[in-house]
Length: 151
Image (cartoon, rainbow, N blue to C red; front, side):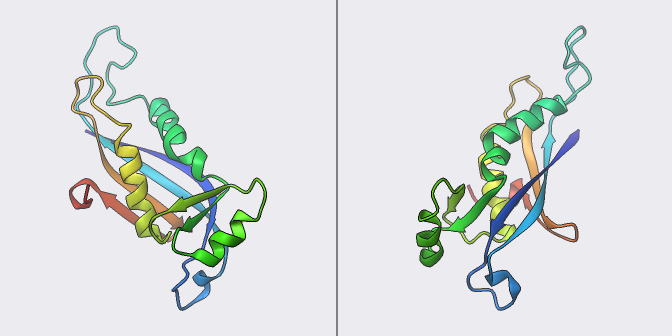
């Protein structure tokens, strides 16, 4: 069985080598969909009975691991040295430094690798992260899928 939880957050970024508008500083209302796969838990009397995982727990773990860190932050590639220097001079600015250019594809991959560490088979139901879908806009998204992610 697969279940999916969607969360939203706001972040800024830029794609320094882009040939169009995305090379400029800008932001997005991102949405992230976290799809988990596992067996339905069958434990009479358990609050988890009939579930793969409680949706509220999916949300809590995603917020702790990723969403709270990226929300209202500027996502910057470590190699974007001019921008890094600029952001370092803004006292108290919320900046997330990444080892990759913050494209939707790279952000989905980074998110998958971060989240994969927190969704584990804690209930004996073979639970694992199957997919992270990151929407940059309502019409543009990237999917990071387990079998395609290099560990």
